Image (cartoon, rainbow, N blue to C red):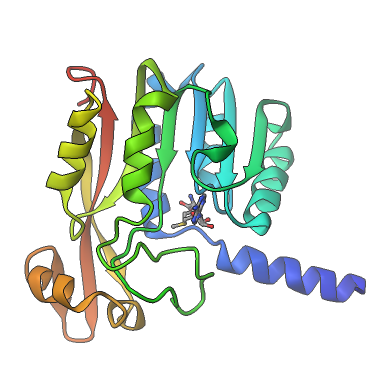
Length: 236
Ligand SMILES: C[S@@+](CC[C@H](N)C(=O)[O-])C[C@H]1O[C@@H](n2cnc3c(N)ncnc32)[C@H](O)[C@@H]1O
């Protein structure tokens, strides 16, 4: 490969890994809780560009660990943390969900998982692994929630994005089975482009249109929560 083609392929990778409104809301909550980030060991599953871990490192996290299924994301995260002077405290692994950190526990676990309810995985301008959460949006969310308790330190917490059009009650029941509780730290609207909305599972769209999905002509917004999950009494 020539230098020019290497540069152009690096630019393409950065473009598909660009942060989203979900990323911004997640960082907003982490900034608001800076006191509990300082000194924490932090894991992110689905680290993408690496920018969420860059934000927690800037807030004074003791260590940051990123996992992503895409090699380009692992490379992007590693480069970003090095570039910002956090290389010494960061590690990145290519792998599936919890697999690279089996047996390890963290004070803070963050995730903005693909959990958009859609049967296909084609979202224009993104990699197939970016958004698609299967027909009910839970393809990765459920195994993430199932593995959470065994990867948190005793006073540890998770902070994650959670679309309001994916059952919050089911997530609440799942974490309760592990002895954890959840609470929304923030509920906000995110823009859903027309071509992405067209991919949404029909019965979810029918049920949520006018409820958690708000349409104004060709423009649509979905409600999204940033959830905190931890031992009962420690979240909120
Ligand atoms: C919605 S993006 C979020 C990226 C980044 N955290 C952010 O907020 O900008 C979801 C990320 O999860 C990654 N991913 C998808 N499936 C995964 C899996 N099975 N295990 C780990 N990461 C996965 C994708 O490659 C993508 O980077």
